[in-house]
Image (cartoon, rainbow, N blue to C red; front, top):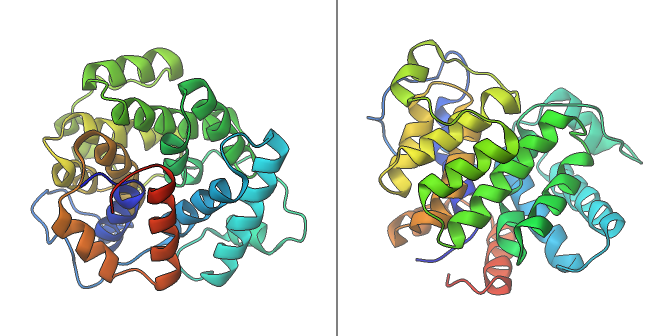
Length: 273
């Protein structure tokens, strides 16, 4: 089934029971939908950015996009404040006039998947990905993480081969995607910087055989599992598509307001849902 945004949200739900140093696992053999699997901040902000783009449209000015992203993230974040936001981002959500706070964590990359689907050129995709990062994560690394993930999704949905996606990300963003998961996994642990989680998530996609395998790869690293799986899943969705049964299971775990944005966004980008 051709969809958008479900990859990030399903990855988040599937990875959430294994997030953190004491819950991380180092195997691909785990229950795909654990009873404790739930939407976290990754899903909430993915929906928020998507809704922001829907409100302003593909041709909006830079300032208009930023304003819409801030407003939407604050609205959704305040509504679902206890889903796993960091202390610093909670403070950002509560501020009357929030300012970027020089973070390089993977929050900018985990929420960007809608940008990879919404625009007709990779140049526009990269620009808007940068804008969505800059409202909070205004560091070179925070921006690089968002741009690279959105670019990979754009290329995947436009039928680029894996070696083309790998080559583009490596040449444009400087990530090393030539490592192997089996070499990364033994010493990897929960870390939150874009530079030490985005490439690992992209490698999880590159080594995968289908959508589910990409998510299992990401969780098996034993890192920031929900975010790694959300990023890997967002690219895998664009490359492979997602089985209908997984879409249905994900739907059952979402509140109505999130489902509504998912449907609206998929209609806007011409996908079947």
